[in-house]
Structure formats: C-alpha cells, structure tokens
Length: 122
Image (tube, rainbow, N blue to C red):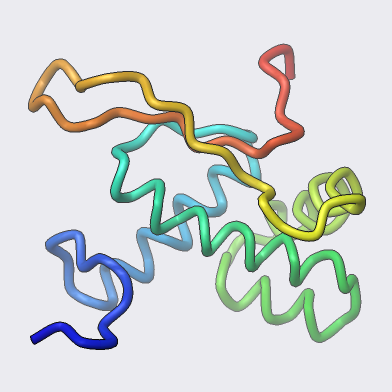
C-alpha cells in the first residue's frame, strides 16, 4: 500500500530523479519557461517554488543551499538577482502550467511550465 508516499517516481531511480529535477528547475529559472510532460511539470513546480522562496530570504545560507541543489553559479545568480526580486509581492504560486495537448511522438501530455512573471518577448 502507498499510504503516506508522496511524489511520483517517473520510472527513474532516486539519484536520476534528483538530478533531473535539479537540471529542469535550473532551466526554468534560466529561461523562464520549459516544455515538458504533465507529471514532470507537476513535480518540478514544487521544487522551483521552494527555490524561489529560499531566494527571497537572500542571505548567505540560502545562497549556499540553492547552489548545493542547482550546481550552476550562473543559475543561482539569476535566481537571486532577477527572479526572486520580481516575485517579491507574491507569497506562493510562482509557476504556472499551460497544457499544450498530446505530444506527437508518444501521445504524452505536453505542457509549458513557466514562471508567472515570464513574458514571451524575453
């Protein structure tokens, strides 16, 4: 039974899943929007929201925690200097999921996962 078991496994081992979440969260922060599948987007949304909440604290410990997860200094810098200040007026809900319909290759649900302050002209 799966009582009190949260999150999706996405047919990956734990290390692969953690690495994938870190990479995809970094891509959302860096580009503002990514195209992925529905279940992946629903899992990554929580990761990105937690990173933005961490970045809003803007102290050294928060920077080190974000850097330990993201592994890329440029993404951490963008998170703390560009993304978090732009979302300072919000308490939560920093991302949105826009459904695109089935993907051509395998019929998986394709979605955009984007930051709420992301504009297409960026």
